Structure formats: C-alpha cells, structure tokens
Length: 188
Image 1 (tube, rainbow, N blue to C red):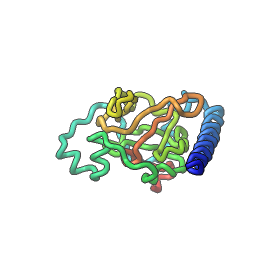
Image 2: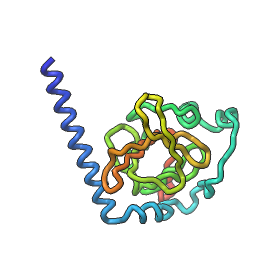
Image 3: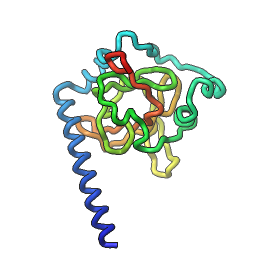
C-alpha cells in the first residue's frame, strides 16, 4: 500500500514537471509572437489549395445526412457530444505547421501555432481562431465545465479549461476525431 502511494506520488510529480515544461515552451512561443498576431495570422499556415469553409454562416443538416458524411466515431463526438478515449488520436502528436479544421464542416478552428502538448491525451490549444467556436456550460459530470462547439455546424469539439499555459491560461482540450489537420505543405 505504501509503495502504491509512493508510485502515485512520483507519477504526479513527473506529470506536473512535464506539464510545467510544456507550459513554459508554449509561453516562450507566445512571447515571440503575440496572441493577437497568432489569432490574426492563422491563414499564413493554410495550404494554398486547402478546401476549407470561408464562412461561419450556420450549416443545417439532418441527423441522417450527418450519419452519411461522418464516420461513426465522428458522429458520436460531433453530433452526440461524446468523448474519444485519451491518447487515441494521431493529432495529439501532430507537430507540422498547418491548420486544424472541424471534421464536420471544414471551418478552421486552430492553427499549429496555437497547439501545445498538455499531457492529457487529447490535442490541446492555448487559444483558438476568434469567432469560430461557441461555448456553453456543460453540467453532465455535475461540476460545471465550459463546452465548445463549431460555430458553423454546431459540432461538439471539446472543453476549455483554465489550467493552460501563459499567457492565456487556457487549455482548449479537443477530441482529435472532431478535427482534420491540413498541413501547410498541402501533403497530409
């Protein structure tokens, strides 16, 4: 029993140190370029021939139409507000320059400059592209959390927490299956 407690303590210290290192790296990146510039200049990371939504005008589809266009995991996350298991998305380890778009409607939501490794097992970002996401309070787990959705198709993306790196202190914790990554080079 004491050994388990010791191992849990060591793991917690290690995870805390790792999160601090990641937060420090994100803070260093943000020092070289302001948050406003990162949010404004995300299009510089978009591939020239990228097929993305250029409007945030609401998209209306029936449940049957969504089922035809989305994979089963995408449907359950985007349309039924489910959550994928941690450490299952290849986007969690994505390090190339590019833009992350909604898997449901191709609206750009984040750029690679906004991404950091939170150690949580889901792709995480310290800010988002302005006016492309909407939030609401989620009380499913009793403790209120801030849930966010794509403003265009209403697809559930994840939750935003206040334990992210400086300067925003935000962690936009996203389901990888709810995103599609478009590398700047245009080669997926």
